[in-house]
Image (cartoon, rainbow, N blue to C red; front, top):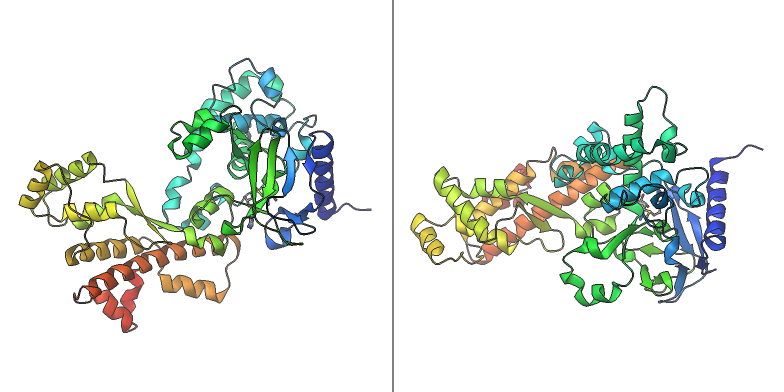
Length: 461
Ligand SMILES: C[S@@+](CC[C@H](N)C(=O)[O-])C[C@H]1O[C@@H](n2cnc3c(N)ncnc32)[C@H](O)[C@@H]1O
């Protein structure tokens, strides 16, 4: 009989679970199972077969069953110090490449890891262009990553060909150079690290990390990157998380943090990520992440809009002063949850709008103005938001129409949802400013009047 992709999927699940229990000594709660969620675009997931209480063990793994630069045999094959000299994410990429060997002790696990991704580095130029305007485009870093792979990893692979000869690096597609194939494989593993790995606390440092929590200055020293089988098969959906991975003396324990009903999916927490970042790192979005959306406002455009009346020399003096005072960041975030212009940005705009004598007085006193929302400041903020909205290829209304028409699917739909979310923040923040000024009895801005009249200028945000 012919083997279907569904059979392969299920066979891989069964082989993986058997390996996890028999070879890795995992303890798995019989009330949970792997599930096929491909129909809803979520790949594999973990579901409850019967109800789970809060604080119930889902599974426990010995710490050594996490695949890391230490637990992989690669560390003993390479000369001492080679892996340790690499950044942790690069070392894990090399480990993952090495463990693609048919003889790998991790094979049933490696077989489950994806080969194709929807993360932004895999988008075509035309798909990417649909995200124009979103600051996420500056964060993709595909070329920088490739340069790093070639500079830091390729020499290790070339110097130790024997070690890597039976790995995925040997399967060079016809017509492709080894270097290109190496880069593609490194990208694949980098995507796995980005969307599947965990940062675990170095054993012995757990207490220290707990005590110091937020003050942890040198995270690299305290944590190590690890691939944690099964823990990484839990999906996430913002605040629907009902499970968490705990590090205990007994090992790595996935436990429920809320009751889970029979048939429900077990969700981990990938963090409060804006949808733009979720797309970049994990290649999916859901509406539940809209609450974490942000719009980045570039300081250069803030300075440009607020200093139209200033000579270049005066503008530079104020920028230097704000930098010295530590209030001028490269950019400021407007957040969906707040819709408020950050106080530091208000201080920046207030400073840039001071008259020359006022600025001199503040500078001599080593102070900055209060984060006040005067009418003059509001005027400039509205201009900043209008200019920011024009960086997107479409208006908010056009995006709403595109989505309502329902023609777009997959990456294109996700791109429109992301940029629409950002525009909604701009529109919301704009309305908050206009409302606050109206409450002070100031005249309305033209945009607000146009909006009330159903006019076209609304398109600015
Ligand atoms: C840590 S893995 C989780 C297991 C994964 N579903 C699998 O099949 O291997 C993270 C990836 O799962 C997918 N994913 C996680 N949560 C999701 C969700 N709520 N909806 C759709 N896909 C999701 C994304 O592709 C993400 O990059």
